[in-house]
Length: 300
Image (cartoon, rainbow, N blue to C red; front, side, top):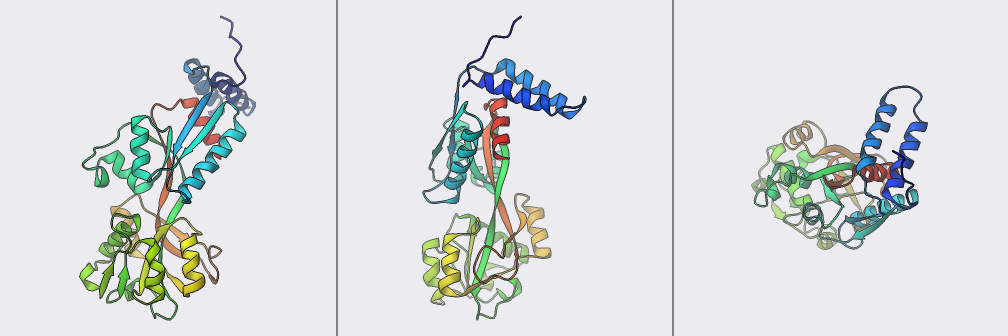
C-alpha cells in the first residue's frame, strides 16, 4: 500500500523526519537500527495534525518558569510541527495534578514530590499515587545553601547545635530538607537555641540583623535572593558533606549529592559540597511517543 504524503506541519511528517535522521546515523544493524523500527512503529499510530504542548511551571520570576520558556524555545526552534505554551502555577504539586488530569502535557517537578506522587507517600498520602505520570529527564539540581555570617565562628554542621537557626518556611522544600538533615545528624530540634521558620523575603533582615545565626534556602544557583545576602550581608556557606549525607540519601533516595559552584556568587574561592533535589520534567503515559522523543532531542 502506498504511503500517503504528509502535511509539512504534521506529527506524521515529524515522525518521518526523525526516522530519516535516525537512519542516517545507522551504519550497521545495532541500536540505531532498532531505534528506527521503534520510530516506525510509533509512526503508524501518530495523528496527522500539529501538536501544541502545554507545560506547567511555577510562580512568576521563578526558575521553573525560565526553564519552561527554555524548553519551549528549544522545541519550537527544532521542530516547526510543535508549538509550546508556558503556564505559571503554584509549583510541583499543581503541575503533577495538572498532568494527571490532562490539563498539562508537561510539568516541572521537584524530585521529592515526584517520588511521593509515584509511591503515594508524603504529600500524596491523602491524594493517592498518580500511576499515569512519567519522567522525561532531569533538568538541574536545586541545592541546599546553608548560610551564616563570616564572623559567626561556624565552620561546619557540627557547630550548628545551640545556635539560632532558620530552617525555612513550613511546608517548603528548605524546611523539609533541613529537618531531614538534622534527623540524619541525630540532632533533635530541641538542641538548638531557637528555630525560626522564615519566608524567603524575611531571611535578609534576620541574618543581617543577627536574629538568627544560620539561614538556609533550597534553590537553583545562582539565586537572586542569595546574591543579595552575599553582597549586602557578608554571608558565607556551610558545607553539607560526610557520612550524614550518605545516611540521608540512603533513607531518602530522591536527594543527590551536589555542590554550589564557586562561580555562583562573589567572593567564593571553592565549590561548596551540599545536597539537593532535581528539577524533573514530567509527563503522562498519554504523551505521543514521537513527541516525547522529539522534545527530549530538542533539549539535548
